[in-house]
Length: 627
Image (cartoon, rainbow, N blue to C red):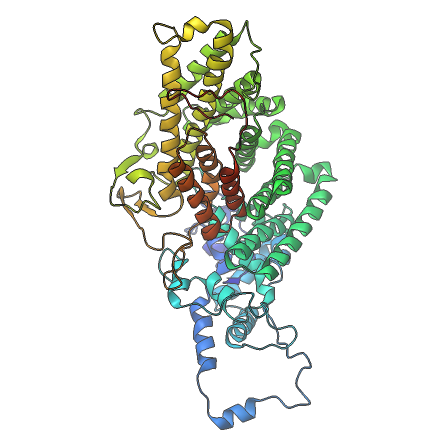
């Protein structure tokens, strides 16, 4: 993939005439004044990278082809003219368009685009040539080779390269990574492409997208594109390093991470730049980097700091951030990260985030399931912190029944929100297939959703209800047994049935999360247009052989799933086979996507229940999670 700089967003007529376009909608003002038919605007995000894979591969093969001896002798460099290091000119891609993205001159963008439409500039040929050299050469002396012996496997079979592309074509990232001499200057661009392909979802149907404004921020001349580039490259290269096992790539990823941190600190020093969309986005991307590279408590602490930093930034931005669709979208995703953090540590959502959320609600449809769920989630965390299931001694003699009623009311509300009244795109299909691979499908049942973002919202509801029913369970067994034990008696106690329902709800929510795993990990292929789907069990996981390598799937589904799967797998009520299945899927996530936190969470489940509280009581079937 060749980075093409910042493409012009002007309409086709203005680009052809090389005039400044005001980019008005539905047609530009220039065409309207000239009485010309405006051809409209193109999707500039699809033009940032140009696919040169086929051309590069053809050039590399041509260079490997035998040549006449006379040609070989005539083309060999003389001893006096040879470089002492054996190096060669590399593609100028040390940064993903740092200069082009920073340039806010539309005319320059138009000129660059005109050159591309006429067949590309001379620089593009240079890039193609040097990338061809990189693919063709196997020995570059001191500085030409990116990966040393043993750091990466030799060039894999074509099936491996094709496995990373849903369409079956050779993936450019795989070509560069597995070629014996991929140029080091191409790494930042490759890291950016890896991130955009794996962690960005575009708006579709009920899905608003996830980080799909990243390219807009990168192309906005008013934003600090270099800051976002550094963060995106760091996260992308970290994913590449973890999936390929390259220490060199990880070293470059950490260098980009350090660069991004330094740029964030510079941005925070100015009240103006601290409010920029690019600053908040960069901090959230750095949180994703910590998820990808997580190796222990230190990484979790760094992730926590990034989420808290993003929360502080959106608070600092105030209600003015809601004046643009981008600002509103950034706020929603920052709040989503805050809710994950609060769930992880049993904390309530900060008051100022609540205030801003109330202000943002005026601009968001009230019937949006994801938005409604986030409001209920805030209530759940309030209850969770108030009840504090980690306490072993009863402490709420006067209010436990009031809190219990509130918890039951929220649970019923969530159950009613996600029922048959949802629109068709928000519903899912349950498939029972006893013949499905037990490694991929838990107990022969899986779900089919519109896409992974819709599945994420459903799993968020299930995780929310698991936490809520833990609160109910704690109130009944810690408080109820202390202050009104007769109300829990099996022979007529008012709350005896509520205990059984809490058990059943927790099991149902856990199994719902596990049923979403096949689609989240890319094994369910669903065509939303025709509502057809099928389960693909090929190359099921890390145990696949070299001839049938582990598949590569977009990491966004696994990223969405991570916390919910860990929560479902860490329930002390789980039988050993359930815990083992979750641990296996978490390790498959690590192998397929390079998200190291999945391995850390798998180890945590194996070692102990991650939540330790003394309220768990044995007996009958009341073994509920001790959070």
